[in-house]
Each structure stands twice: as structure tokens, then as C-alpha cells.
Amino acid sequence: MDTALPVQKQLDAYNARDIDAFMPWWAEDCEYYEFPDRLLARGTAEVRERHVARFREPNLYGRLLSRITVGNVVVDHETVTRSFPDGPGEVDVIAIYEVENGKIAKAWFKSGPPRLCSAFSLRSANAEDAAAIRALTREAYAKWIPVIGREPLPMTVDYDAAVRMHRIDLLYVDGALVALIEMIAKDDHLLIENIAVSPACQGRGWGRRLLAHAEQVAVEAGYSVVRLFTNKLFAANVRLYGGVGYGVDREEESGLGVAVYMSKRVGGDAPDGVAGRLPVRGAIAGQLSGRGTRPPPDRVLAMT
Image: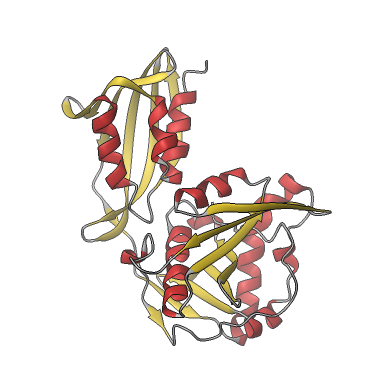
């Protein structure tokens, strides 16, 4: 087995916030340290307890910057997005893993000082934003062209019409547009039609925050279900949505590929991640409308 495989698998599960996929890659008697020698957890029960709490953070994400493997030791350099007491931010982490028999036996973590995120805000789009929406969406979806052999349909949508027909909310960081979410009100659910995050800002938790925002919108508009869909070829997205509570309802095949339809119940207790909700300017229920036909399978969410 590739020495780095259990390290990568647990990182994938960490980013999906999937504790059941995370734990099998740790040895029963594993040891978990703050570098160099402060023991934080011993055994899978303690490691699990530590990460159950961590995985509740709506913007949690570890972005791998580099990796080296020497013998049975794997050293990762990551930037981890987290929810700190003073707000969301990032921290640089060096993670050292000792792998035995295909599982992580020991791990040491050295973290730098947290960097809080820049000021961000969210507002509803208007007709004047159509060009910016089109540019950001094309930029975000371009990475999928080699995967499916063509431009995903969101790259060709008429956003002059979409901004009039649907609610599209825009996320700004330090005054720059970095992400957007498009939502449609259906008879019995809120549909997330599209999420797009600028490639330069991916892996920082903005997509998860927009999912949490959509759940907030759904609850305040009186819905109990949020639905979304993605192309089956984008397996990382399916795992990601599963990690924040979306279950697979069905798969449908067409000439464009296989669409995976997913949903999540919201309401009652706050939806997962809503505690870190974004400030919203404008009426929460404004511009929620839905017209048109069944979405094609590659109107995927470009947020990873």
C-alpha cells in the first residue's frame, strides 16, 4: 500500500466532515500530539471525540500545499480554514504522520498563528451584476471541461435572464466578488441551482458558508427541505455535500451524463452551519422564483 494513502484518505474525510470515513484510517492505539510531545488524544475513541466536535465547524477545510514521504513517515503542509472564537480564518499546519500496517499510528501537528478572514458581505444580485456573474461562473466551472469533455452548461447560461428569474446572492471579500449562489423556490423545497467560487478562493470554506446561507434562506422562507444536484463524475462534490448532511435521493442518466440528486431537511434546530451565517443586505425572501424545465445533469456546484 502507498504509505501516503491513509493520510490522503483521512484528509478527504476531514474535508467532507465525515467522521465514519475518517476513523478507519487511524490505528486503534494511535497517538495524536501537538508537536513536539504534548499528547492530545490516545486511541480511536479519543481521536473520534476530538474530531466530532471539529467537524461541526461549517467552513472546516484543509488545503494541502505540499507533501513528502520518507519511509513510513508522511509530512504535509496545509492551510486549514476553521471557525475560531473571534471568527472564521486560516491557520498554517505542518502535520507529521507515522504509518504502520496501512493506518496512522502516530501524528504530530504544529500550527502557526490563526489569520482571521477579511471582511465579507453578501447581497442579492440585480440586472447590472449579470456580466460579473457570468465571468465568475465561467472561471469557476472551467476546471470541469477536461472531466466531461465540454463546457458545463452553467458556462453558457443567459445570466441576464437568470438574474431576473432566480435569486442570486453574491459574496464579497474586501470588496471583491469571490462567490455566488443561485436559488429557486419550488412548491415544496428550495433548490440550489448553482454555487460558484472563484478558483483563487476555493478551499477556504466559502462554498460551505453559502450552503449554510441557503439553508437559512429556506428556513426563513418556510421550507423544510433544500435540494441540489451534481454530475456523478464530480465524486468529490458528492462526498462534500454528504459531509454537510445532504443525502442522495436518486441518480438519473441522460445524454449529458448521470445527475446525482441530493437533499437535506432543515428547520427546527438551526441548519448545520447556520450559527456562522453571513450578514444579508436586502429582504431574505426576495427574488425567490422558479420557472423552466428539469435541470440538466452538469449544472453542478463549482465550489471545491
